Length: 339
Ligand SMILES: Nc1nc2c(ncn2[C@@H]2O[C@H](COP(=O)(O)OP(=O)(O)OP(=O)(O)O)[C@@H](O)[C@H]2O)c(=O)[nH]1
Ligand SMILES: [Mg+2]
Image (cartoon, rainbow, N blue to C red):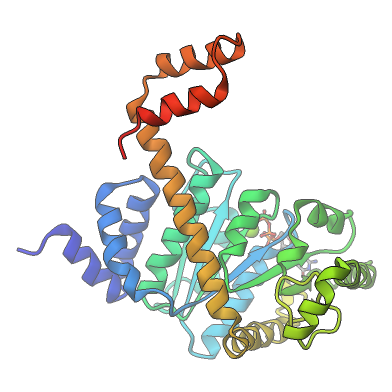
């Protein structure tokens, strides 16, 4: 009889929705069997185009993602959507955006939609999201769209794990300032001003263009020559991807307007990543980050296993009271952790 793990692996590879859903739930719950499946599926990953969509709350991300998915379906591409909601304690279910989407996209075998919510730390959410993307990749979806609310570092991390990052703004309300604060603009490959039917859209577009140029031209001069040498982009000094200049698009997601141009740019961004060698560089950087994060997680788990909480408190108090220096404390703790 095939084991549970083998069955899951085969069914996920075959794109069976129920099994994909089950495996994702196992990942969210930190199930040990899930880890074994992920290990086996890893070699089937690296084929999908992962697109991150982020931006301030309510800018129309879900509506636009829905429209992007519909456009991709017309091009016969299969699409998986992962909606990450850091503010919601619910998961796997019906967030508002998904209910809207379900109406349009449900019943289509080429679309898979899943919500993920915070369980414990946000770092954990970033890890779980990356595992879920891996599952959908192994299940052979052509495009995987990860929607996050661009509000904090964890969301930036989740977006950074994508090949192509779309940052969405909407007119007014000082949204663009929110974005700058979170450092999200720097991660953008494509900028979208949605709700272009609203007054002030032109101003938001101009503001974003100005910010892009400021970011590009205020780069440290000492980097300039080096970047010029590797890039066709004359003001790419601050750009995360020399050679690719993010452009600003206007959309009215509720009417599907402007969406095709965005989808076309998503496609050409992947061509750029491929032809410039940037894709391989990103894969290296992402693999390094993933290993780093997993190492830290594993080490923390070992440390917590090896040192009783009361013992830790005793050491912390000793350092606070200057009876012990932190250097010796760390050495002492390290000696107690089996390697
Ligand atoms: N006028 C106008 N309204 C829009 C447009 N796109 C989305 N909306 C509306 O804006 C509201 C928020 O849309 P969502 O797609 O849920 O926005 P979101 O960014 O996913 O929201 P969160 O996930 O909660 O951050 C909804 O009422 C949409 O109908 C647009 O182009 N024009
Ligand atoms: Mg949403």
